[in-house]
Image 1 (cartoon, rainbow, N blue to C red):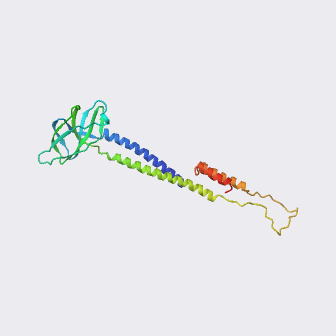
Image 2 (image 1 turned 90 degrees about the horizontal axis):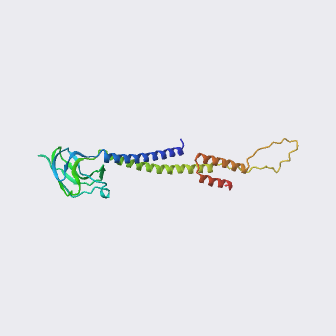
Image 3 (image 1 turned 180 degrees about the vertical axis):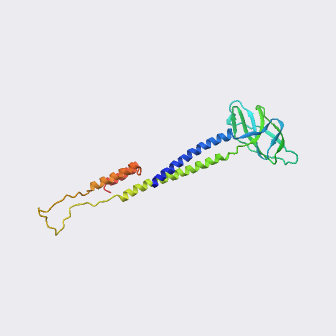
Length: 257
């Protein structure tokens, strides 16, 4: 398989990889935001209020969950001053709560935004107390759950796009080099025929009329140029030469170079 064809295959593969990466990125974002994000998997507690929730060991997200009319101002749900106290079962260490504001997700006037991330030391039933300045919010609650387990897919597709981009650049450079090399090989390998004319020896005698004669068809300079132009056109038609490269080499041939 020629180097030029390999370069074309590599370029097409790079473009396909980038298209797949963009599509996968969009799909993974939508899935993670609307279908795989279990923000209220462990239950909800009204604000203000209290309740008992069973929380498994590990990381738990705490989100503000409310009903909105229309789109939130500025595109995101404003987070008012909130407070949460998580009391562990007897003999269990206090959970560590860290502020971690996330992006807003809104579906059919139902909006939620991550506010905290809690590290739960052991599975058990925890008492949760909430408070905050939530005047103006409709049915505000703190939802306990977990984020999507497939969030890493977003970064996989980002990496795939970067690889495809680098591959496309390298393939484009490779393809350009093969075109230039094909043109250079043609110019270097084109036949250069010396001018052919009758050779008269100083000591040669004039042939007698009875001597047989024969007609030799020799290539003239014009014939050589014609053959080179035909070869040049074939290289252009096959894609080995661009139109600009073809015109440059044709001009050189017609000028006698």
